[in-house]
Image (cartoon, rainbow, N blue to C red; front, side, top):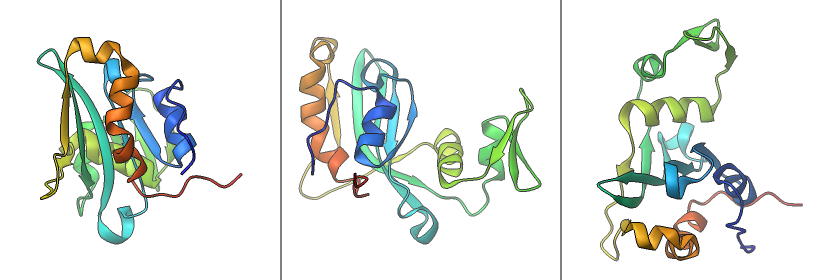
Length: 156
């Protein structure tokens, strides 16, 4: 795998790795989720690495976003509705095509993500505010998790 440039924003890091991302530009300070779409349709889940700030700490979890049989409740949670094979935002009236990314973001907002449980290691890491100040330490600690999401990086 090529070197990861962690000086980029969350969406740019995801693009560099060939994954998708939802959340704030800086997941360390303001939450965000990296995910791969490869298993969404066939196996009904998307592997993910999720950043969440609460209780004065950053919690980073390796897990999955599960695909429900009916996504309508997920869309409603986001203030969206399905109309003629398009997702329509009830607040702005904007519409867009249904993609794996749209479905995954809706499922994540409605159900959240399920943390992996592994025999050989922890799937949750906690970082204090002092540790968060050294963003390189955070990225280094979870780098393997991002690489393991599994979609190959785009070929140049």
